Amino acid sequence: MKKGEKKMRCSHCNNLEIVKNGSTGSGKQKYKCKSCNRQFVQNPQSNKIPEETKQLIDKLLLEKISLAGIARNTQVSKRW
Image: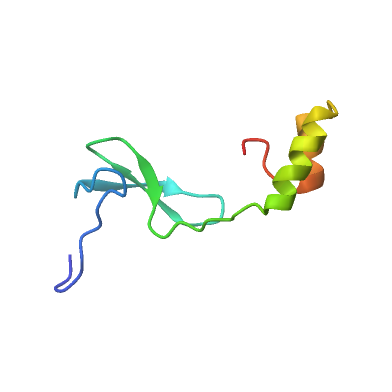
C-alpha cells in the first residue's frame, strides 16, 4: 500500500480484511469481506425507482400480468 493511501473497509462490519472478488457486469471491481463474507463495490450507484413506476407495477400485479412482462415494460429488474 502506498504512503497516504487509505485502506478500504467493509461497508457492513467495518473490517479491514478485504479481498478482490471479481467484477460486476458493468466492470466495477467487487470486494469481499473475510470476516462477514459480504460482497460490495466501492462506490455503489443507487438507481431509485420513481413512485409513479412503483404504483404502476402494483396495478399491473393486481391485473395478473406476468412478472417478466411487467419487468420488461417498466424497465425494472424482475428481482426488484
